[in-house]
Length: 170
Image 1 (cartoon, rainbow, N blue to C red):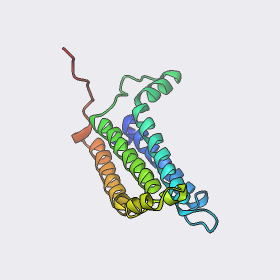
Image 2: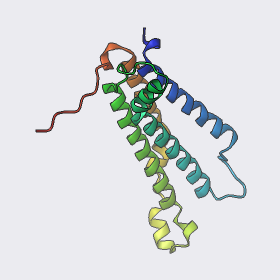
Image 3: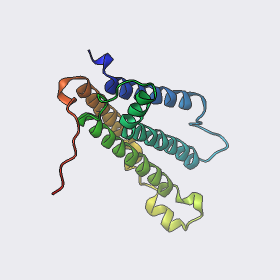
């Protein structure tokens, strides 16, 4: 049964823990509307927080196997069964896309609000209507989250449980 597979359990536990922390952060710490702060800075805080969370998830996935091996070795337990799945490699790559979307949203946020940086009215007018990423952010992140769940599902089935092996360079 897969609940005894340390590879799958650690990936799922890490994702669940970080997503729960993200929910707590946005419910209790992050200001999403402010009377005293400009919307550009509110959005910047939101997008930067998402970027940092996605970076943490990427790093957890990238270093999950070595960290698990080190933990098991320190406990004197066998660790030869700890490896990276193909699906896990794809999942880590997906978090690069998550981070790219966050960076695009952050960049567009600053470009759209150039008036906050005292640029000329002509320059501000050119970029003030850039909203492609702003209005696509939630749907794109939702699709990426769906792909995340799909990759986790493939990891929990035989479809994605092949070990990732680097191609030999000749």
